[in-house]
Length: 400
Image (cartoon, rainbow, N blue to C red; front, side):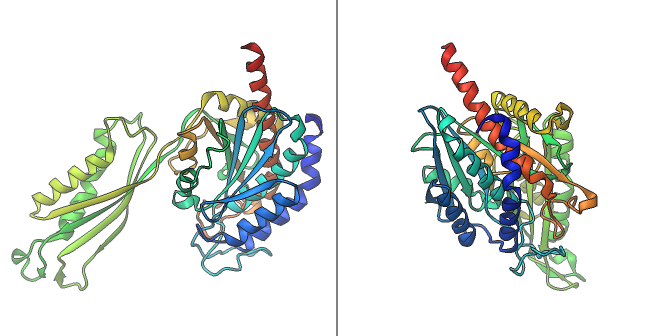
């Protein structure tokens, strides 16, 4: 197969891949519970003659070995669904109560399976190998588990590429840019401790509610007054819990939320440490104590410049129009960042938003769905990126 026939090859398997996507969509599984999905992936790859192994329990790795030795390119998709009750009226609606593919991972898996089938048919043309990874539990840092079990080794990975169907972008548009494209994510919990009492005698208590309210309000100055606007920072409180009755001042109030940034940990701004200090001091002003705990869920996702150039050139061929490619970044987080922080990586947004097809709802929404007409470009993008990556590697090798 030559490069001119790729669109035809993709078209020939599109119905098959859409059927796989719908099957996965109808049978969603939460992180590290993707047993059925992992089995489906293994069977499909093995039927193509691609060797597979399990990593991190429900993760699947497949290897396509090229016709000659060379670099190893890793292509990644994610398997897990979300704890969301689906509200779509479609023939392939989730059959699992309270669980649905509300982020497009079903399509990512199907798209990479389609690309794997065609790339495997072209393997004799590859001066290197392609490592296919189907990752469990993307929604909660499953990439680290795969890395800890050696997915970037044996053989060592030289570069990694992934894509995400993206309803904020119109169908067919591609978001590709260098630098930070998705946010780092810290999850925090603040326990504000006071002294409970009767609301008729507030002077006999130490009210943690008013202290907690002051923390929420005061925290906003971190992102608007203490950190440069050129360094995007979002501090959000998503949960407030405290009290049992209207006339009782509680002993404690709990605040929970997230901090998202588009810059590295080493930056002096460090909003998490600022929030911790602020919470303790504001609580003290009210005679309370604040206990702050937090954990890093994801680091910022940073795209490699050289791979971005390869992605843009590949996308131009896929879309046939350079104007369909735009720079795009967002404050949502993605654990693909763990791969791209260790080896050069690029993460591409493939627009799938179309109001007429009702594929414009936000990610993680009960009405989320994709425009299935964006599946073929996704398959083609994986293939053309891989082929151009190897072509450019050979050019470099000849020029050395």
